[in-house]
Image (cartoon, rainbow, N blue to C red; front, side, top):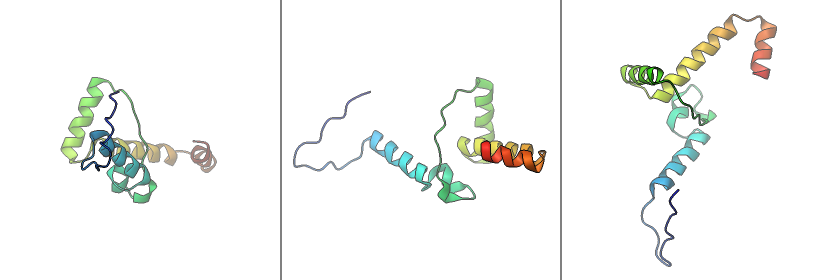
Length: 104
């Protein structure tokens, strides 16, 4: 990882580096102030970072779906997961559903 050059003494830095902008974006997203979290039913919930590798076919399908729906890939993944979660929970008994949500 490249090291940042320290600013010259007595002179304020007039720009943000790419890493500064990325850090600010991640902090806002985690607080729910923009990004994927702002486009959900509960904008104040914040967001969590997820790093994963997908098979190429799944990645291409995700890109196609996102482009077709005019949404981000993160929004498509979130929608698919929430729909699957609802379907699974709907088939459970009330006791199983309570255990599912509490001990998830």
